[in-house]
Each structure stands twice: as C-alpha cells, then as structure tokens.
Length: 120
Image 1 (tube, helix red, strand yellow):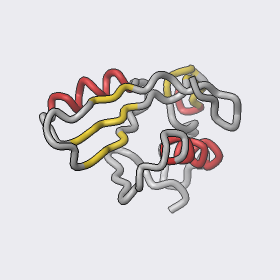
Image 2 (image 1 turned 180 degrees about the horizontal axis):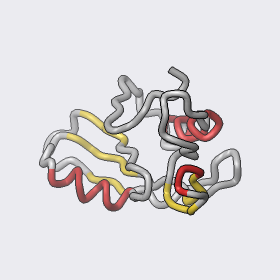
Image 3 (image 1 turned 90 degrees about the vertical axis):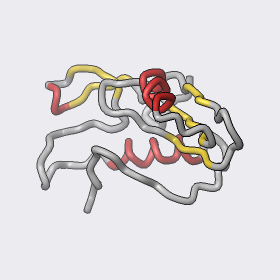
Image 4 (image 1 turned 120 degrees about the horizontal axis):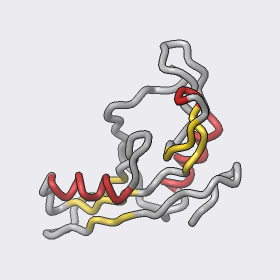
C-alpha cells in the first residue's frame, strides 16, 4: 500500500491485461465510494481487447460533503457548487501517484468522465 504526502494509504490496484495486441494503457480513476476492483469489472465489460487498464483504489478518507463520513475518494469534496473549495493538495498528490508512482507510462492524454475541473 502506497502513502500520499498526507500519510493516507491508497488501496489496491487492479490490472486488466489486454486480450489482444497491446496498443494503449488507460488509468481509470473510480468515482467516490468505489474501488479499483469494481472499475476493473466495469472496464472488462467494455471488451476493448487492445487496452491495458490500470484501476487503482483511492484512499479511504473523510469527505466533507458527506458530513465527514469516510469513503474512498481521490480528494476531499467540500461541496458541489461552481465556487466550491478545491482540495488541490490531494489532487496534486493523486496525479503524482498515478503518473509517477506507477512508473513512467509516457502519458499522452487525460480524459475526465463524470467529474469536475478544479480551479477552472
């Protein structure tokens, strides 16, 4: 288990290896309250045989918008509004973990689905 800069432990990482010729690698960051194993099950159903999927699990942490309840989350979600306070230290730590902690993957693109763009 890896620790972020705040000493919070990340969960297990699940890999889904390509069934065909490996042409791309995607790091899938799950939604709040989910985990890498669930993500791996989901991406397997996509049947994209040339893709290797890396599905890490976020740390379990208190989430402000959930009244401080602890769940898996990449960042502390303080509220869900346009002017919400962003947890940039955790976001930076997560991106460092994904890009640097998993080795040099030659990252070419980042795609966000069902998320928000902090500090826009």
